[in-house]
Image 1 (cartoon, one colour):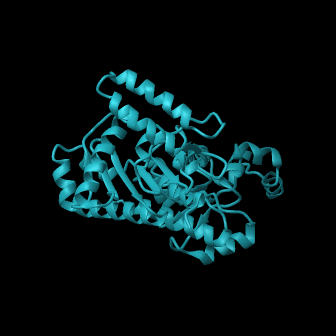
Image 2: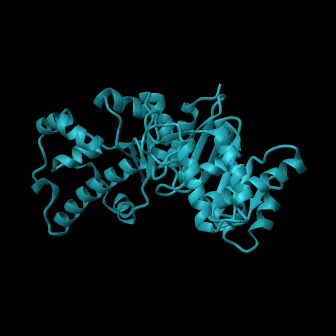
Image 3: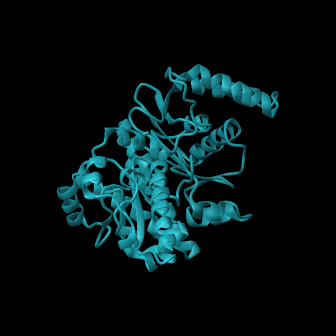
Amino acid sequence: MTTILDLIELSKWAGQRFDLVQAGGGNSSFKTDDNQMFIKASGISLSEVSTSNGFVTVDLVPLRKGLTKLHKQQETLDKKALEAAAEELLAKVKTATNVARPSIETFLHAYLETYAMHTHGIVVNTIACRKNWRETFEQIFPESLCVSYKTPGIELALELDLQVSAYIKEKGKKPSIIFLQNHGLIVSAPTAAEVKFLTEEVTIKLEQFLNITNNTYRLTSVISENIHNVFGASKVSYLSNDAGLRELIINAKPLFFQRPFTPDTLVYCGVRLLVLNDFDDADTLTKYKENFTEIPRVIICRDLIFFIADSVRKAREIEEVLKFHLAVLVINVTQNIQPQDIQFLEEEELNYLAKWDAEKYRQAV
């Protein structure tokens, strides 16, 4: 059974991976049996979506009819006029009453399978920006469709429609893997699980072709799944690439485990950092749950630092606060002020702050 929950899981899976999407980039969609399409809202990160946030619904029947009309008008309208007509169409087919704007690629998703996801992968774009991009992709993925560069939005969607129609005539089916020149990857399939599998398969094959590995980013998925299994919560894991933090975890690891000296460190980074023996170490997570009854915000495993939150944006906030905490300690140490000479917050105060509704609300916003 296909559901919006599958789309949310798929979106968060990709959204926590820097090697697949960055900032608010990428988009995802799901088509219902009654011709409604859920599409990620513009400006929302894939990692931020939920049942109540991040998606806009559009009516597929008038959307596709409108796109057919725009095909006919394309030769008579200039670029700006075509985009204006597309915006007018988008406003008409949007069924939700909220103010969120559908993704710029809503038109593109109209031509795809039940589930679709567009990502801006590092390895995909390493090839997609080369002059021999088409030959390379077709050599590695002979069943894929390669679409030459068009301005994102209506121009790209209309070009994709032409290319998909030609592909169907030749192959008798829709393409599952579509490469966009200077842009990224589209994967669409009847189920979210297939989209996830194919996106990962493309990524791994291209890493092998380029003789590189971004495997550390995949570890975010392992940790997120482990947290879900132990705590029953859907969180994203964000792998820190901060050079300063990476240096400190190697050369000054004990500083990471000093008690907070300011409320923000407790509120954002949690009661304790957690060190895992391995990325799928469920036993250590379970013990943490028994001791602290909350999900760890910062996890260290094999000297990699992961921040756990509802979205990548919130995870980066935790990263900033931890950097602040460590920066203060480092300055003190370099001036011969040792941890025993610092007034850290007492355990009683930490316990109180951990339950303080005002700070919990501020951190959650």
